[in-house]
Length: 178
Ligand SMILES: Cc1cc2nc3c(=O)[nH]c(=O)nc-3n(C[C@H](O)[C@H](O)[C@H](O)COP(=O)(O)O)c2cc1C
Image (cartoon, rainbow, N blue to C red; front, top):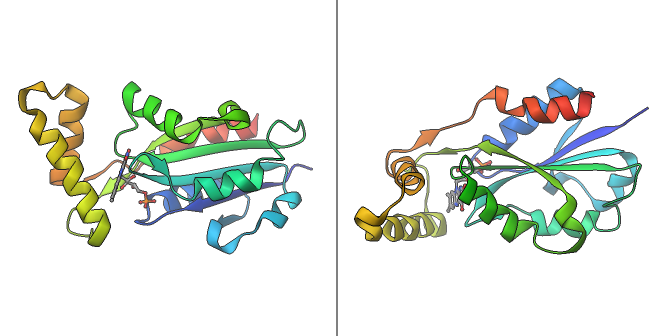
């Protein structure tokens, strides 16, 4: 029998929500990566990892990649990733995400699904606030040279947004139910 697990890292809650929905649909356990360990991967045939995106990087993905390196490409293991962000519904954003996170070696072959995240300007503090401030400045400095995708991103940063919806898990569910 196939055994499936969902592992995730979420700071603001969107990735956790997707992970729990996937767990419900596939009737499988769901763990934060902080409550899991490399040794326990041996218990599962299907491994789904989800992380929120910050400054282009999928959260805790480097840790997860170290864990799965010996497993990628093994015929009995199916490993799939989902990334959750505000800038993944356009080709440039997805390409940048792939370049940063799936750059080298065996990881290039991993499938990644893209899901909309959430952002509330009132909730961010510290380094996150500084980072978002830098992105906002980079975009506003472009003025009229901003393209449509950048304009959308700026609107999401300035006004906040919630792009999370359950139907976005459907492609992953189809892949694992087939
Ligand atoms: C400091 C910071 C940097 C972010 N950088 C990106 C980014 O590079 N690309 C993107 O698509 N979304 C980015 N986001 C949006 C988050 O990915 C989004 O809020 C997502 O919901 C985070 O996942 P979580 O809610 O599970 O923590 C950023 C958010 C913050 C606060």
